[in-house]
Image 1 (cartoon, rainbow, N blue to C red):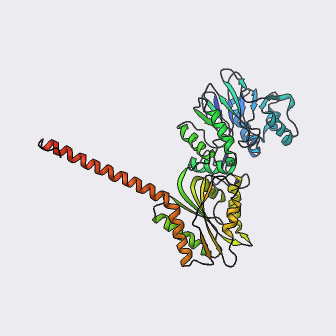
Image 2 (cartoon, rainbow, N blue to C red):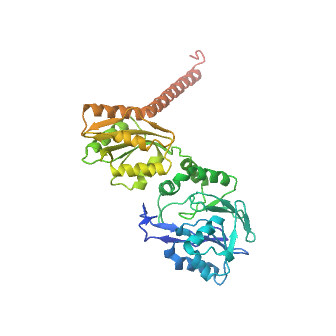
Image 3 (cartoon, helix red, strand yellow):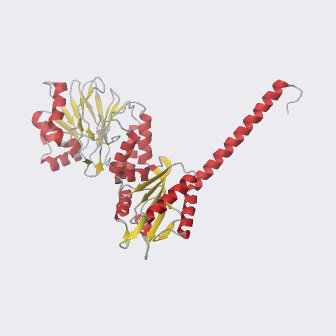
Length: 422
């Protein structure tokens, strides 16, 4: 696959993998992207997972034939991208390795050598001329490892973005980019929003026409769409107006309360209500939705003087990824010593800019008149903004319609008779 006249795709698709990084379900597989730049000097951008050594090297030789690469550029040292560095040097012994100093330290850790005789250590802003192609290296520490850099080709206006703008899924499978890129970003990069914001500021100074990530498709059209989503995600802003209800239920009583709340929210006109059972869902999907929507309700039982394990795990995932800038409500259930709400609030106390609802739901074993009334109050509070916005929009539409009708009558009257403009 040619990306430009001189830039070629030499990556691989993985359909054997079931869990990426040992935890993320990838039903559509995974792509490990690598790129080759042909010029007076030849550069390879990153390697691939260890299980695809021969396929990757065959892809390179299929383009180069007997020519040898001059540089192997290592942007990121996670093994799904760096595992074949040593194998590569055995085949191409004279190739220089271009990376940050921290990356060479990690090579020593992974391979028992830092390739001292092959090193070209680069810093932020350093350049490498291949001929007509001039590469500029931009360091991106903690996006999402400390050694990371991205590379900009000024000639073809291509940004090689390391794990940035990556997604789950092999390249030979069609799926929704935003859904799988969001799940990938939140799960893997989400903790490092501040560092991503810094990289986006650096990238804004570049004329980028193509983005080549280490996972997922090459992005060429409507780049503002992808950049805007990354800005939303990395600034922890609300992407979609809506409410996530995440729950666990032992005997079904908490589930009944969640279902009732969902019905009432929809009746009141809330734009989007998503309900997820944390014991049965893909946890990464649930975490993704928590960061996507502006409001969330956590519903669970008191369990062993704590909260139900799946809820505990879910909240830990949120905290680890810097969950913030959201409204959170609670439904707790307990039969003799309910303390789920208190426990969940304490867990979330370190999160920034969270607003806890004033009206929360307290169930003693099963729903009754009091807890049902609390559900009404919680639904009212969560939908208050939407109701107010809807009313304001409706009023504007009514005034606009009235004005249009009046203007229409005036036109008809004035055209019909000049005796009366009223």
